[in-house]
Amino acid sequence: MSPPYTAPRWLPGGHAQTVWPLLRKGRLPSYRRARWHTPDDDFIDLDWVDGGRTAPLLVLFHGLEGNSGSHYARALMHAVGRRGWCGAVVHFRGCSGEPNLLPRAYHSGDSAEIDWVLRRLRLAHAGPLFAAGVSLGANCLLKWLGEQGAGAQPVLTAAAAVSAPVDLAAASASLSRGANRLYSRHFLKTLIPTALARLERFPGLYSGETVRAAATLHDFDEAVTAPLHGFRGAADYYAQSSAKQFLGGVKVPTLLLNSRNDPFLPERALPARAQLAAAITQETPRQGGHAGFVVGAFPGRLDWLPGRLLEFFERAGASATST
Image (cartoon, rainbow, N blue to C red; front, side, top):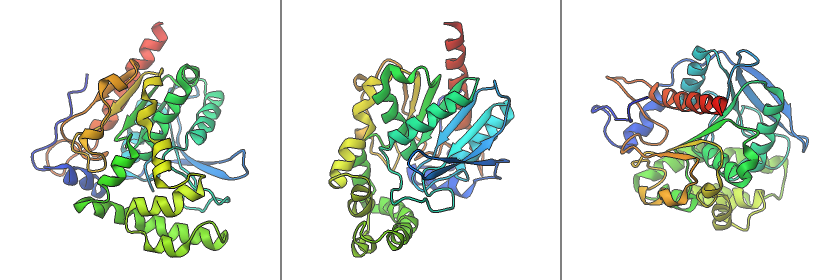
């Protein structure tokens, strides 16, 4: 079994452990892109790592403004390829380098999209199906797992959620304070231009002036995410979409991995064991940052997280086969 995560001494603190991996992405896997047309006449793009038809398939749902080039996606898909597994990084709408066709975008509670993707993958793939989510994608995946309950068991063999902001209101508040505002500004550099470009194509969706004035992710969710996806405001969006309230309903074996020094979600907002279904294995290492988990001597490696996820999936797959 993989040792518990321990941060290297040369990389202290949640901010350094979050930011450093962004500078150490490594090379891209050899992806094959496929486009799926959605039931509502839009599309999503998936980047594939090919393996055998009966080999395990690991599907990854990325974080806010992420894609198949994100550091965690590169590391995980390289590890998948080395095992001879199949891998697929699912791009949320608008995240694959091309604007989507409809006014809607993606958000932290979009479990309906998760449902459509996973069920289509299940029908097409003969081997075990595993799903991982990171950050926003992890919250979406957990919400789907909890909503589906036993209904997810015929679809997925096991799941993993990494750095999931399971309390969106707490995460939004954390990212609006102090040094954490730098993360908000980083996301807003792409979110705002994309929202304004969408407004040019679909006038009247929301106020361009309010979008331009957004200084935090809460401001952006109030101005764009909520009205675009049918919520009454940011508070309603957070209340309906936070995965924490659904965790008691999870029936598929699931690894829930959150570091306690994650700048995106304060430790006090992490779910208590009593809030979790028996199917959930919770790990809360003291360090790791947000989707960081660097190990080794300087300049460090990003192989601990893929190793932990694949180990969990292999054990879950073996257990499912023996029962």
